[in-house]
Length: 105
Image (cartoon, rainbow, N blue to C red; front, side, top):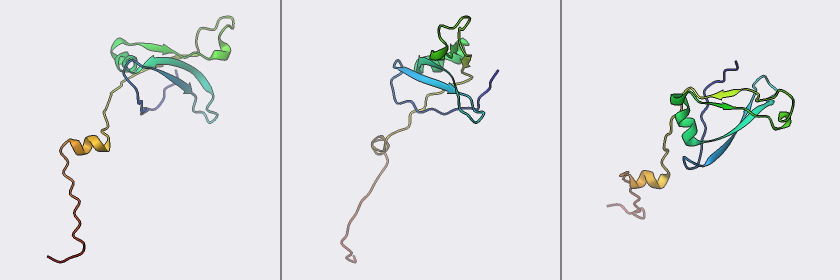
């Protein structure tokens, strides 16, 4: 069983848009293990449902006895909204830009 360190992924999409993910080994060569397609909703609900995503390697599909190259398991997933600068200002941040032309009061 290959255990990976926690990953942070930035996904700029809607919850039900399909996202393509690739899993590579980390022994230095970064060889492709397999790929899977899921939605953000699938990833967030995976830990509760004990769902696993099969990693498929296209060049191995069709070989005798090949079903997948492993399983991708999600231990935990959270969705965090990172506000844009405009949302930050609209949220009540006060900004003051003053120009006095260098004149003393």
